Amino acid sequence: MPLYRYRAKNMSGKVSTGILDAASEMAVVYRLREKGRYPTSIEEKKKQTVRLSVGKLFERITQKDLAVFCRQFATALNAGIPILTGLDILRKQNGSPKMRAAVENLYREVQKGKSLSFIMRMHRKVFPQMLVNMIEAGELSGTLDKVMERMASHYEKEYRISQKVKNALVYPSLVAVVAIIVVVILVTVVLPTFVSMFEDTEMVLPLSTRILISISGILRGNILVLLIAAGGLHVLFRVCTKSGAGKRLLDTIRLKVPIMGSVNKKMAAARFARTLGAMVSSGISLLRGIEITMKVVDNTIIRDKLGSVEDHVKTGRGLFQPLKDADIFPPMLIQMVKIGEDTGTLDYMLAKTADVFDSEVENAVTRMTTLLEPAIIVAMAFVVGFIVISLVMPMFDMMTSVNF
Image (cartoon, rainbow, N blue to C red; front, side, top):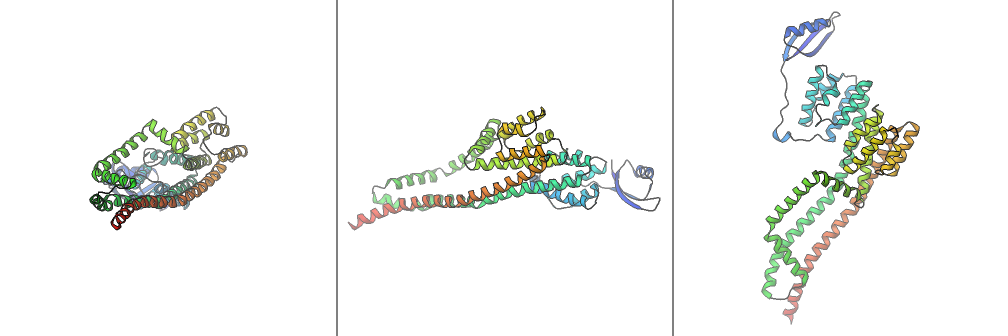
């Protein structure tokens, strides 16, 4: 049905505006009169569509997008702005086209009297299940403003931690890429100019020089094949890690690899604690919270063990003992869960534990990158030194033979 924008007055002369979907203008008049309001103007509202370019169709909704949406919505609700008006404001804000399109749809559907959580559940690719369940709990308890604030803080912390990890790895990655480019240029461009000179002397070259010449020949003669092979291996790796067995193997390695394994466990523990704590504090049952948190943790090994934890919680064992038996998270989290259950402050303890693990992850990543940067430089110096020595040794031999 078409949408109509109206302006009406009640018996006391108070003016109100809004939008209704109806079969005709007369139907709008009848509906308004039933509510004791008398329209002064009615006009049909053209449906707005948010057009997405082909490139934007596959744009992902990031944690930053969700954090901004929740923060702006929470601010509007705390200011006493109704949900519909808040959505009207949000749909005009700048952001990803996919988010704007989703908020536009939320606005239209809420006008029809549907609940916010019900409509969000129809946009699973935009709004995570955790956010939908939290908003549903907020609607039922009348604390939607507090829930949106809590979710804004949740996504802001998730985004901040992920950005710090990514930013910490930018410089080492850049140094590694530059080192590889320098080595490739030395081997494929600089080295061949010396090879012809060595061949003219017909002298016996050192082993390191012969190895270097062989590597140069392989790279120069098969560069296209090597690039295609590298691309094929990358695609094969991505396909294998998408499969069940491949994903489990990769997740197992992530948890057991030295240094990074501990960091990955702490990151998973922080996400588990923050997510479950936020849901429990909003009135969502522990069992339902665990079920949703399992989908937030991006590690199949941990997810499977949380499944067994969920089964034990269903029997009434509580959370502490099943988590301890699963042996997937650091002991600190287990002990904080026990204290939280004993004192009735599980949500508070989980939130504090998540903050502690976030801080430990940041410190661990900082230490790792501090050690990684000089290690890459030393490795680069070793490779370049090997190339230089391999070139200089034959030249010294040539000079020695000339002097004699």
